[in-house]
Length: 354
Image (cartoon, rainbow, N blue to C red):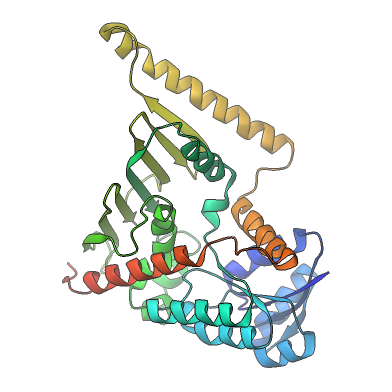
């Protein structure tokens, strides 16, 4: 039975606790927050985990096998280091650390300790993302040529409004402000397509909001590898708030929509010109119909969950701990995201915010 502890009892901690409690062979033994009342309310609401106000005290008292770190990113390096030194495997919420140097330090410390480190790239473990990855590997769209990653963020949503209304919120202290908190969700989807460790990056950022904000809300990135290019878009203004990945290949184009949880294809027409232009909308409608029914069947099996990706990533993290296998997310991918993100933030801060 794996003993699991969690530190940082804010909004995202609820999702982690719920998925920890669903795992066979794992038991939540402690929850910790620098504000003890936060730890107490989390333990009471879920009926699991002894509350602590001191992280080192929890590590010493509970001797957990694994620790989930769901604090603001400013504390990730110190807390993960303490957990690794205490002999724990570590699951860190995104971003892994504030900068590339800190991320590299964490990876090196995990390797030196012989412990597994992972980070919350949860959307790549969602069922539709897994299907898309398998189809790309199978050659369904030929060789990838270009990838488009889009992540929409609602500033009036439960997470956005929390820091928008609070000038002292920890997001305001991040080097990349809003983008620092969400860029991983956009960029990490590209790690399997661009093998170069340091691809060329072009960045455009600006603020487009009816409110007077002190940080940019729109980000456009173009990333150039030798054989594959990518666009990344983060938008706080486009509606509806979309979240998708589109992969353009030599034989076809595929899109995974993380909101509707669908995987669809565009293929070149194979029939004569007039009919070839007439039939594709019906073929696309049929694909969406099939995807819709796939989701209905999942819902009927009680297997259609918002945090399905977090559940799968947590399960693979624990499986790697038990079996001594590789981490569920390669360290190369974590460092790739961190390095590229830091370049983006440096360039974002060069622009005057309008």
